[in-house]
Image 1: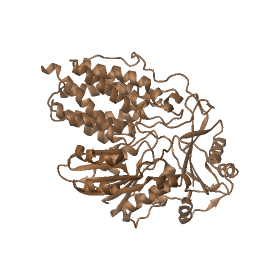
Image 2: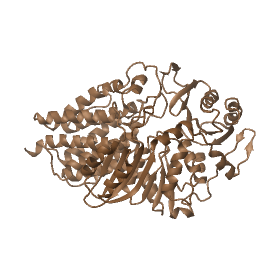
Image 3: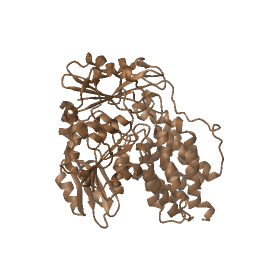
Image 4: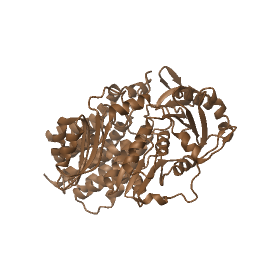
Length: 579
């Protein structure tokens, strides 16, 4: 086959750059594909920033060889990955790279097989893949490309087949994932991938499409349906809790020489479900739900040294989530010596004069993700050494998190992402450092604060991680923000500009007055087993409004201690913790 029919490094650069331009042109359209009508949609932004990092890395390559360019694509996207959608995209590129990194050129069939390996790598990175997400779109697009290649299609034909099938599957995602159908949108990550493929086809063919002249994709799909409001994840399902068949969540790293990932996986498959075995020949990460953790450890030990092994009883965790409502934040407030005022407690957490790594961080460091000067002061006072700026709509990249970890002298680090959309990037950080990183799966700021309250510098990282994870079951997380479009959820009519109260990412209150919505939200969160209500108000809240918070909440949470702090966070007018 002549070189003009092959995929070269230069052609791959053209494809990715054109894909990036197309994705950038449609970034805001992707951002609006939020299952909730709130201003925190950031999938388009995250995917754009991830691809931008890949483009920068590819531009450093002067060789025309495909292998060098595709390795740069994988490295750039890995380090620049933001949000779950960006991490999944980086894994698609990572698998593509593994298949092509030793080639100067690739045939259409070799390229199609590489796309297939990209999908397999991305699926392995997600613990509970869900249908109707970017993973589904990627899988079906790759299958279509492979079918076209086997029939003799050229590179443009292979990519065009992937694009056509990707569009078809994207349009069907609301039928696969109930939350999308309820919201009247297609999957945001899948839409971003389709735009990336569309641009790649243009880059390969040399076509120039003027922004605005492109046929609009059917992103918004009519009126949303009423139903339970559940936030859709980027590839990961979060259903109601099923019966637990395999009780022990077992995770570990295996270090050795010449490790065989496929062999380890095949030996572990009979021992449980939710199996994840990923890595390289010197380091492999294992995750499995099993009833025989001893056998899992024995299998892995036969291949190499075991690192960071943890076994957790998921039945016990489930029971804790259902029944445990132990208050922990009050002790931290008392220790900080804050005084109550007539308007509620003033901020009890003051940032150190020299906010940087603490003297004790040489042994164990703590990195947290947060934004807002008030919240950052809270985390520093509770023991955080490094604050990585970020949160909803501002997800830090894997490289940002890695920089925070590497900036500490400690060889053992606790990492708190404090946002469900940053969890995958945090987990990815563990693969890129020689330090021992314990990712505490905090999905909200209130969870992050509860975890830090339980932090004990005298314990090691593994012991602290266990304590922190247990603390997460004790806190309910709520937010108040505003609607960016008309919508309907659970028979609740929502109009653009309304204030919305969310309890653990479920819409429970809507209204025109933020304090009334806040009070309604707290009324849903507080019960006979809770004791403390903590409110962090955002940057847009005036002191006059903040002064009314305690009195407005007292009737909704009788017998509760009510604390009010300035968080200074964007996007969310109020963040609420009930323990």
